[in-house]
Image 1 (cartoon, one colour):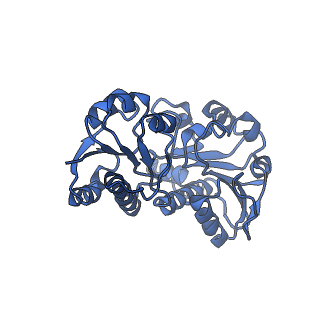
Image 2 (cartoon, one colour; image 1 turned 30 degrees about the vertical axis):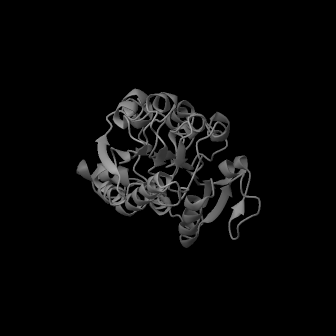
Image 3 (cartoon, helix red, strand yellow; image 1 turned 135 degrees about the vertical axis):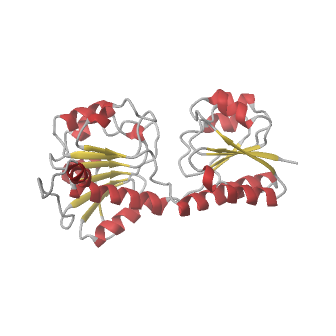
Length: 314
C-alpha cells in the first residue's frame, strides 16, 4: 500500500477531508504536525519512507529529497512553491504539483480588508476606545477617487481590481508577463505605479528577480500619504528600508501579512504605530483550505495511479 504524509500545521483542522479522499483511494495516510517547517532534517524525519507528501510552508529541498528516497510526489497545499527546491526535485525525479487559484478569493479579500483598515485607521480608534477615549482624534480616508497599484495581476490581482472598481478607485497594475492592457485597468511600469498609487498591494511570486524588489529606490517614489500592503511573500520587501521609511513617516503606513522571517516576533517593524500585521493568514479561510486540500490530495492520487497531476509544476 502506498503511503502519504500530510504535514499539517496551520491547516490541520481542514486536513480531514483530503485525508478521507486519500484513504478512499487506498492510500495509507498519516497527519503529522511540523513544529519547525524551515528545518529540512525535521521535514525528512516526518516524511520518512512515504511516497507522497502534502505540504504547506514546509521547506522541501536537497536534504529532504536525499533522505527520503521513496518520495515520488510533493503536493503543495497552496500556490507558491518557493519553499520547494524544484531543481533538486527534478534531479531526484520527484513530481511537484500545486493548487493554483484555490486561495485567490481569500487572499484578495484579505488584502482589500487591510486596505480598508488602513484607510479608516481602525487599530488607532480601537486603541482609543480601550483607553476610554471617545470621539474622532484624527481623520481616515475615503477610497473613492484614490488610486490603487497592484503588483502582479494574476487571479488575486484581478479580484482586487474588481473590488477596487466597486469602490470607484482608479486601478493601475504592473505585470511583466501580461503584454496587452486589460481594460478598464491601466498597465504601467513599476516606477510609475509606486509614484502614482495611494495604496500599493503586492501579489508577485517570489523569484530571484522579485526578491527585495521593494527597496529604497521604489519606496522613495511613494507619496508621503501612500500605504503598502503585502499578502504575498515577505521577501519581496527590503524590510530595513521599509522600516526607515515608516519610522520617518516618509510613507503613511503598511499592512503586512507576511515577513522575511516568520514568526517575526523580534521584527522592528512591529514596534511602529503605522504598521498593522497579521500572522500569514490571508489564504486561511474554510473555503480556501478545503479547495487547496482536495486538489493537493487529488494531485497525489493521480501520481500514485501513474497519471499526470491536476497542476504539475515540475
